Image 1 (cartoon, rainbow, N blue to C red):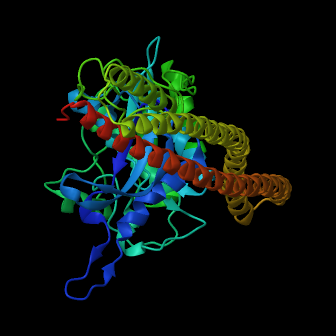
Image 2 (cartoon, rainbow, N blue to C red):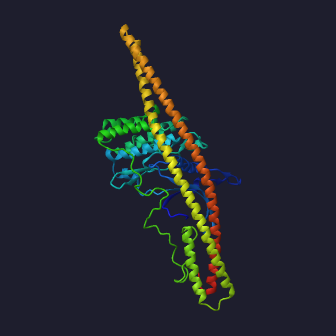
Image 3 (cartoon, one colour):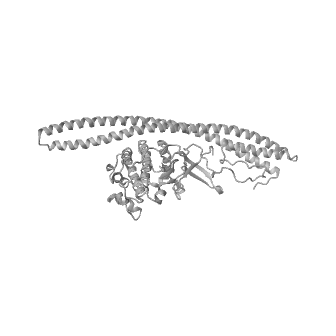
Length: 510
């Protein structure tokens, strides 16, 4: 442990790791490993206050009891001290006043994710964590991007992706094998979440998972208004359109969903603004919890001689201080003995030099760790600022796209009227309206195209900054691992010297 930080660690199940093919010696690569690590890559590209942050990920070989070695694929995530929306719904359905702000926050997270080229693919109450804010209200945190699709990178395990997700929440296009799936699939799942949050049940009645998968392909969902009373018609309309079988019948993107939800919230007197940050410590900030105890178990030495620190339990500088205390106690015991051989004094001298070397190494490790933390702080800042800029432009793009669609429909109506007009003056008037509509639509398309170019430029900039940042992080991590390995070597030698002095003093090591 290099820094004192409360985190959550997610480990891939052993059954989903690479496995050896019987009687061949060959290794069967697991596609789930890539899905698992994809979560880290996807989340690190998004950086949003309503998405659980991942601070580290990778693979490590650990030694278990009995000398058994195993590979661990892991994610180190921001600790969220709350409960899932699933648990909240299990107690009782939510009121619209509570459900709308929660879903709004998830939609804001999805809007950012989709603009970054990431589709979550497994939106469900279990993956939405809630934290009670000071002053009341919920802070929603979206997690589990393990099956996320990075749209402009593509997939290397499409056959596995087709079976990932949760029955009841999966958009029909996944089951139909469509290849051009976009963010509207997440909006379908989010619509199901909003439906369930308000009614306590899913939109389709089913006896098992198989029916949950197949019924949306051929049947219409039960209207939400039939499941719960006092549901506003506008809110029910948004929910039912969001869970439409055809993606084209849903809101065309998360910003459009948010705009409609905000209008509905306004009629109900509900605020859907983004919750302020700082409700609880963000990732990277030490989190003080009284029940966390990093102290080693009771000493195996005499009470006056503290036990040596354990590798990986204390911070580098704390490890040095514990070694100093340990060797000071041993030195006091050695000084009281006149019958010890010179070798013991030589060991004590060697230990003093090693402790000083450990102190210098800890200083270097601390400086490198601070440099790594600074890199992550800078990454949060540039990802946040560029992400916010992209959000603003993308929201404008969504509105421009909506305007173009509205004008396209209006043009079709005018054209049909003109075609069937029998009066020449009416036909001329409609021709002028048609021309004006065409001009406005061309202007709207130009605005839409310009916004698209601006967003593309910012996304390219974000991509380049991410690449440069990740390269620098890898160099810093490599340096940190080398320095930490040096500390581990010094620590193990100190352990051997400590045991040698303990035997010379006649101390019993349990």
